[in-house]
Image (cartoon, rainbow, N blue to C red; front, side):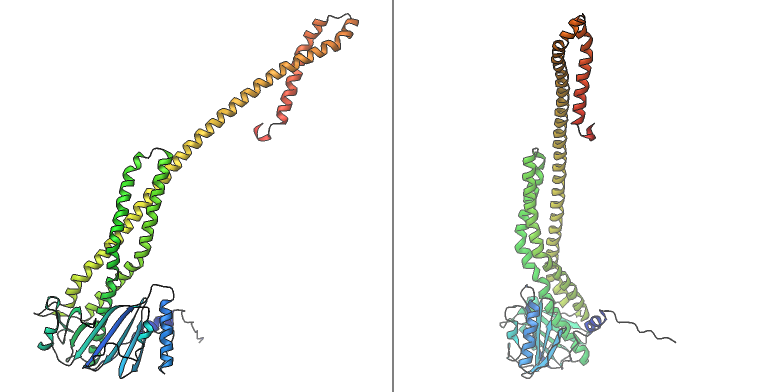
Length: 423
């Protein structure tokens, strides 16, 4: 039996590594977790530079070094379990410590590596061994935005108000006393991801709002131009309208380029956020809202605003493309009409030249024949007198032959100077 060894697909290792790229870390039943979400500058190589600085930090502090493909790297520093996660455009730093740890920026975590980034989210999550949120913790939340829900089919409870405290951290409380260590750890990760992707999903909303007036101006200018196209009857007016449309197209393209990636990322983060909310399997209580309901009432309208802006940009681009196409067709038709008129003038001129040439050729034949007959009269005067022949009769007989000879000579000359394609 012949055994065949198949080569691995080039992407097999990467696909397998992705499954284990972000493993769940087991958390105890009583601890405090903090997470910082830092967006890096939108510059080529920014994330790679952060990773290289982080690797240098690990090297200088005697920590295990991350491999280049690392998406998540953990280590212990100053009595805290620290986890760095590298995403497409942002980095999260999460550390776990005792429940009473109040340090918001402890040393030894490598936070200096993130210089140049911008903080977009900060989360503080307390895990307590209770089966439900103790009453003493509820007054610390803002009542109008309080979310208090059962998770994991009622085996645990979570509370938050999505309001940053004085230290800029959004506070979560998780009573997970009835959960197994693995389920508790999974819920902790899901809650951290919910707040992370909630902030990232809405990152495009301020851009959409600030760009709305400019988009409205472009739409209004386009409407005015389209209404005035019927009045553009001269080539100069059509060219002016085309130049204005092209200027609007450039402005629209610049806006699409500026907002396109942000809106696409917002859609992706929103989809991840919905999956993470579904993953905690929450149900409502008689106090406050659920996380899913609260996020849906606040995040979904923001994402809808971005989607509406994206759709308006797409419609605007289509209108501009169609208008420019119509003007291009109109200019093409006008040019064809002008070319036809020019060709007609050329044809008429050529015909006039042809007729003039024939006229000149006929007159030339008569003139040359006249002079030739005059010369013949002098040349034949003597011989005719010796032969006693009548001079006038002889010239009359010779005249048709002279005219015919001159005409044939003129025709031969014209043929010699006429291109073969026109003969």
